[in-house]
Length: 95
Image (cartoon, rainbow, N blue to C red; front, side, top):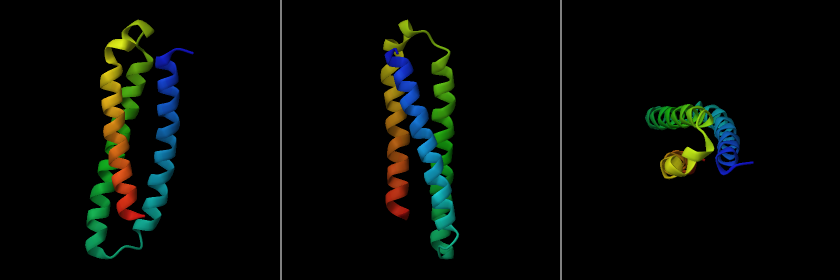
């Protein structure tokens, strides 16, 4: 398995986990006070948007050849880190 394929597989697994976390947090969000609910929904929308962007980006990566992987690996890591931080911050705030 190439580095690109391993990266995509790892990212897809993380996307599924984040999807499950979003579902769990949505359920918790239903019990929040009105003022907190507004912030919760804003952060949830942001997390879902970042997840969708990364998913779309991974679909694009799947179409690339292994030879191009070294050229775009840093960009992929940056996107991954951005989404990971968004989710981590969101989950920490609304646990």
